[in-house]
Image 1 (cartoon, rainbow, N blue to C red):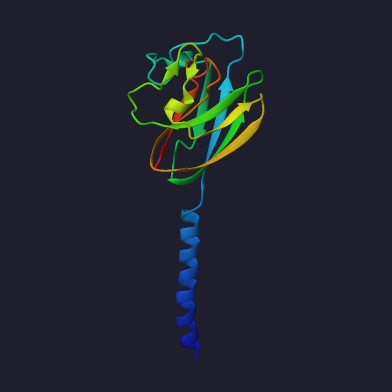
Image 2: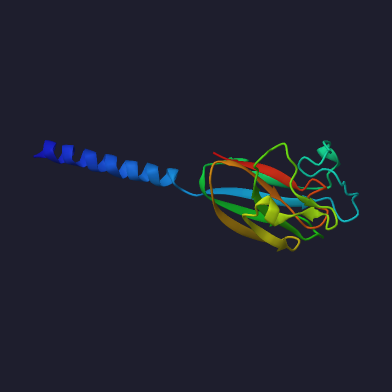
Length: 164
């Protein structure tokens, strides 16, 4: 009788272990996003947006950090914090269709045309020191996170996230 119980319990334990493993593999990913700047008195660059011609990102006086920079496909939560002490920032997510092409940029407004870029969602206009979150279901590919307050994208306030 004891051998029967043991044989019966092993498959159940295996099923429980498989359910636990598949549950954790299916868990949502979280990307911690930090929006930062060097203050309102810092000089702003005008060509540091993705594929805008500038390449010296050390001149950027504001930016976006995303950790981790790669996550699994599926449900992704972006936990966004505005670390600025003075400036409102936001985070917008768009797919990267062609890594060599610039985003559609409206020079008159000094910002990206969000709709033409494929806007997927955003955490809008976070006051200094505030936080927000955005949850999206994402397919494998590259995605751009950026701030679209006028002038911020061109000053280098963007980063890429890879979804695998």
